[in-house]
Each structure stands twice: as C-alpha cells, then as structure tokens.
Length: 257
Image 1 (cartoon, rainbow, N blue to C red):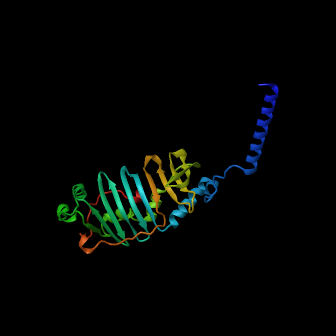
Image 2: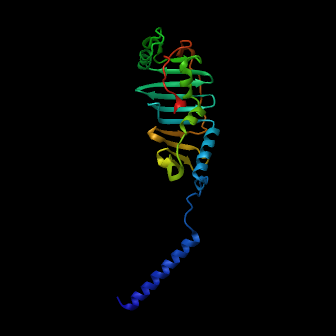
C-alpha cells in the first residue's frame, strides 16, 4: 500500500470518527429513566419511603414467598384487602387455608394438621375429631380463641406489610432490574445483609420483591390494587367449636415477621 493511500485512508477514518462523535454528542446517550416514574434519580431513602407509602395507600395486594420468623419457616400465598384476606400458609410440612371476611376468621386444613394440633398441646379440645369432622371443612375461629390474633395477622394487609417490609442498615441504591416485565430499582440495606428491596420504576412505585435480611426469606408483592372477592363459606361448610380450637401454644404469626 502506497504512502498516499495510507494517508487518505487515515484522513477518511478520522473524518468518520469525528462525525460519529459529533452525532453522539448532539443526540446524547439514551436516558435510562425515559418512560419511568423517575424514582431512580432519588436517594435510596426517598425510594424506600415512597415505596412504603404506595404500599400502604394501595387497597389490595398479593403476598407470596417464604418468611423465617422466630426460628420457624413459613410459606405464604395470600391475597389481602381492606375487608380481610384469603390464601394458604405452609409450615413444618403442613398447609392450611385462611379466610377472613370482616371479623369472621376461618381456617381449613387436612387431617394431619388437626392431629398435629391435638398432639401439640394439652389444652386442645378432646371432642374435636379431625378425621370425622374437620377435614375439608372451614373451622370458625372465635375472637376469644388465643389463636385468633396470631392467625388473623396473616390476613391483615397493613400488619403484614409492617412486619415484612423492614430492613436494617445504611441504605444505598442498587442495581436496576426487571420483575414480570416491569423495570425496577433496588434499595440495598447494610450492604445487602439488612435486606434488598426492589421497587417498580413504572407507574406507582410499589415494592415488588424483598429479600429479607439475615436469610429470613424472600417475599414477592403483586396485583397491587387489583380487586378480588371475599365470601364467607356456606353454612354447611363451617364447623364452629366455640372459643377454643387450637392449643394455647405459640404458633408464630405475621407480626413477628
């Protein structure tokens, strides 16, 4: 290749690079916040605060995932609203369904659950026959029952949010991501050891996922403000044992999360 050809090639290449650089400067880099709610531009404390405000202002939510509280592991799948909630809770190999409509709380579980409850405490009702009466039925839990407060906590939207959306440590803004097609931004507490909260960057800044500090589980939050129907069971589906269904032992609860 002659010196003249090399010189012209160098000139052309330089001109192209200069032109591309000028175009890039004129057009600017893509704005990562375009089409978002702009929350990512704020300090992490503000992002968290707005997420918590949005969560409490929402009427309904679906909570699912795992929670470790007081040394026990729970799996949750609950739909919660202003009049109560419905869903399933699993712990220690047992699964039971909770339904609260207003002040009326019902629990439905299989035979193994009720047998465990009878074995677990001396104060269980000897007249309760899990095999013959309770399997497949909704048992009404009276407000006087010591279990009412613990179990109803799983069906209380704000109580669950207050118990779960807790992080410890200095906040910093984490990575951007995506959950279910929705762009998110992380709030990281204590370098991740105190929890990692992922907040929606689209529309309302709802919290969408929380990795709880201390390996205490991971909770997903979805269906914010989506309506669902709560309906009490039919009379023939209900068994009422008065003011004492479960033994008076500490079974944990949402408020301990």
